[in-house]
Image (tube, rainbow, N blue to C red):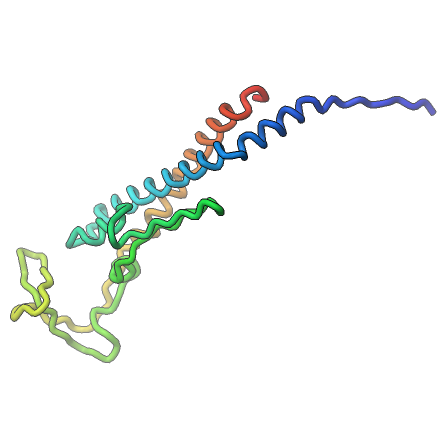
Length: 175
């Protein structure tokens, strides 16, 4: 039986691995963090649009709580794990999104102080006027889930564009 030697040139792999190390050395991770931060801003924009479109806000407090820098906003980046947490600390945001009962369990009716302005009720703590609420379920607007679905639809295209940009920047000699 004849023996033949097979020679494989791994020279290109050496250059490829050098480029991988350079990309991982700092630039790429920083760009990935910027991309993630951009996704966070995009999600906040979509979320705000959904709150407005679904007409779920009487005051600007809920809407404002989804701006980075608002006292009620949650914006936490973990750069070591490259993760971003976005949200709000407003207690009633969950009630508006998920739905809620108008009164606590066992309370048939309650008085809410405030005044009517046209067809809108304005809450005013300690007011002598107001409205009486009977126990009933208020359906949630589900603005959070809707915004997530929209982001999930646009994310693949955003990621594909960014990956193409990164491949051209870091590995153009192999493309």
